[in-house]
Length: 399
Image 1 (tube, rainbow, N blue to C red):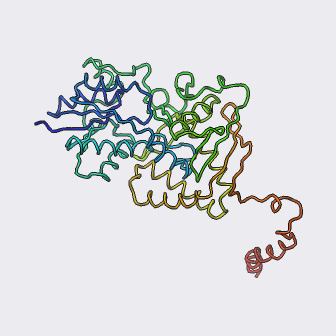
Image 2 (cartoon, helix red, strand yellow; image 1 turned 90 degrees about the vertical axis):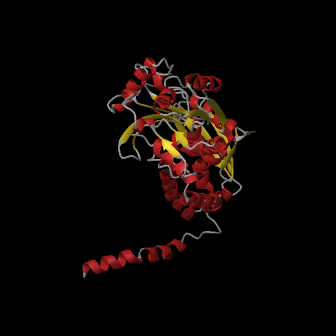
Image 3 (tube, rainbow, N blue to C red; image 1 turned 180 degrees about the horizontal axis):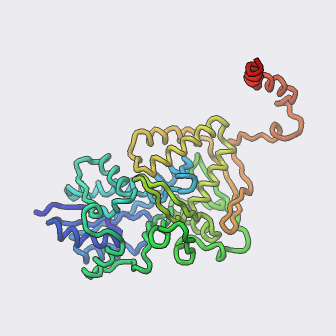
């Protein structure tokens, strides 16, 4: 009996040529596995294509609900953003895909998992970290670190030579990753930072600024303990809520970033990412925290958000530290319940009101008027004590 391998299969350029390449190099039984995190591919055709390319079996596993509830919403509760811009659309999907690949390897008694990540990218680390954390006995085959193919152009030539249908050409050579949270665009003319990206060529989830409506859109988002539950007073499950957020924000050209990011493997790379729904959910959540968290918790959590984003980006989802940070974050979210209204207009987001039963803002105290809870003359003694170290320092300098 041939050894079995599970191939992380998308039907894109890389994984399309991997099946015939593996069959050339190894005497393996290839089982393709497409993990559906909302990439909107015609998944029935993906399965058919995998079999046609030489796989003995193909799985299509829908994990959309789990992806949104257990990964996307956790990142929103954490306010996780990498390098001030990136909402982590790709790295959030990798740990759940890795988990499902390991589950299928166990089900099929496969000793190997194959992936199509390049040897320059972050995803090879993310997938292999998940596999190592869940079953270190499984061996990984990474063709991009082994074969003579050196570029996407070479990969297209290989596909054409072997009669393999691929969804890209040398003229439209962008590398894309899509799921319910975002779509990324890399490669091609984007590799030169001097080039302005082409919205009309790239965008799939978001309208361009020119196409966006000429009037603002108001959207009201309701949270319960940090989790988005309603949009415009309509209660929805996680997947449908994110889809609706994507539609509303995308219509208003919200959620586009063009980033030169620092990759885990040590180089910089440029990507254009569309994250429309995630952007408005994150912005609303951050504002609701301003209303409901005390100063020290709010400010400490800002540092936690940076670390959380770094862990996710670097493929360290399956770590004790990430799980421990989740425990801290869950405690902070107990009072993050309420609604935030946003005004969207041609890529811009403005706050248009918010409220919470747990708000820590009290108008009678914070207003410029009189308050029985705050005597303005009390500030004089506080300021004297607060400035004492400064006074002492000044005195010592004069000596």
